[in-house]
Length: 165
Length: 289
Image (cartoon, rainbow over all chains, first blue to last red; front, side, top):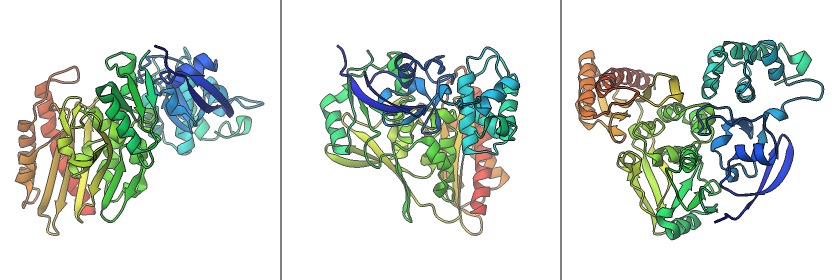
């Protein structure tokens, strides 16, 4: 039996979308399959690994375990929404400069989680950053470079070149 | 296909009506962090899903002179960061803050943690020692159940078909109260607890214990209170010997299983250790209150 489709209005990266989709699909599926925003990755698909992290109303959430009706009326930020007109987002640039990227699969989610951490607490300590990243798994870097990249942005190293967080 | 119908009631009455019509074929969706993986792996196959996010006041956190009213749909992170809870309900903030990662706490709810009824549930441990009452609604009206009677077994709770958990009521603590939740897990909060111990002590001015609560996580088929230990604490002062004795009672009473996180023997030993830590810290907080 085909389920009745539901009208969903979501704002993704400042652009409003009106969609008619089946309510049993996840936010992750809609982002990747309907809106072609494939920067958000699908990993374990049961909210353990964290690679599907996006920001919903500024808060980091795992999009693989959110049904699309739960996101109805909310504002979503994905990795595609961070780049500025003339530069990358400071976290994107620092992840490159600090070698915080190896295979890159966890990176979009790491950067969005990092943004959520710094948005909430611009003076986050190393411990705060590591605690905040607890839901994001990276199997390449050992986290040291990732934490350093976030600390560099926290310390204002990219303010001039890329602007604020 | 994971389910056939999706409902989003905007009143408790409508929600109860839908629950009544669909009986055991319906499941409630709050944060979704427990139910969505189960829908995906088909361990649950409900026909109808009822999203409760649009029910007014379902996520309210209200502190008054009488106590705290905690909406079932309140997100764990909202609870763990709500400054109005800091003074009297720190243990509830703390327990909610020990569940999994930031991303999960941003969306998972206190009511979901209770209804999921995992023996290792962290968030409800604060409610266990603060004498919370669950307010449950159905099309017949509402009823109240003390939190320690809410759980009936692993994954099982007292909710009957057609009922929904609306909120928790927590009475305001007396002066001289200190409470703490200690979670023991290898990989921090993201990990499932090996054991957890919540403790509340209410002290008289001379330090005599007037009231005590001890609750354990992950060492029985459901979250359990250690009444024998609570009784043994009342009208006494918390000495090193008494702390030792209470640790023994808690370890004796719990009935853990062996699994990949620890053996039953190890868990019993850890209950002894963490009960001692929890008692000491609850006393420190009571003294500081």
